[in-house]
Length: 258
Image 1 (cartoon, rainbow, N blue to C red):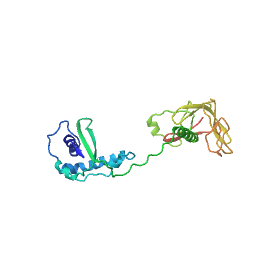
Image 2 (cartoon, rainbow, N blue to C red; image 1 turned 135 degrees about the vertical axis):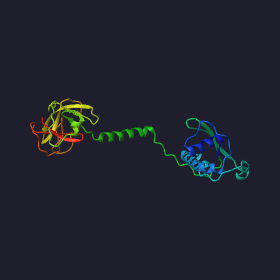
Image 3 (cartoon, rainbow, N blue to C red; image 1 turned 45 degrees about the vertical axis):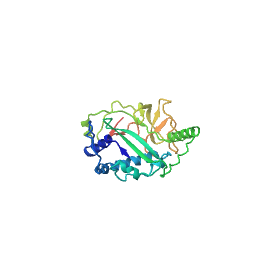
Image 4 (tube, one colour; image 1 turned 180 degrees about the vertical axis):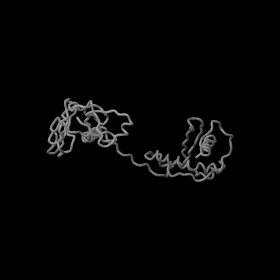
């Protein structure tokens, strides 16, 4: 692995002061200290190269190499390298968004002795995968639950009054009407309207806007009839229209009357 003087100087600056300057430093001869500082970075680059080529044929000649030593003189390369064919990979690198540039060259034996690439997973033809995926997605979506909120009224209060709320405090709901219940989704979107009533011992809302909500009646002996959305659990005592109703507000509970 060969680093150009410009790239070497920029990397050393980043490792020592955390950034590289805009101007090139004076040329100098690399040292063993430079090699010791850059060896973890070289190993990381070689490891990432193997990971990127995990399914490619080039993995055979690029894998299995890590930093070993620092070569002071290029004249010794003739004695160190074997008399075989080599492959060279050259890249021009940009640091600090183009502030500094440099080149790197990786030269490895052409006859690879590293790991063989992993077999690629056989792709499923689109004609088979798309309908199966659509059917599976549709089954999951149709089986998903949808929570609806029955809103009798909305009350705006100053934050100081909210913080001062206490148990058994009565809140006036001047705009509440039992025949104007709004059905909303979790995102606050209006989906239907209804009237408050009872059905088989449960509080329920009869939908008044047809075609907005389609629900399947859940199994059980005491479930709402079509057009009714149950609000209480089966077996609960019916609440007369003149009795207090419980409303849940974020962060606190209060009691109001109709």
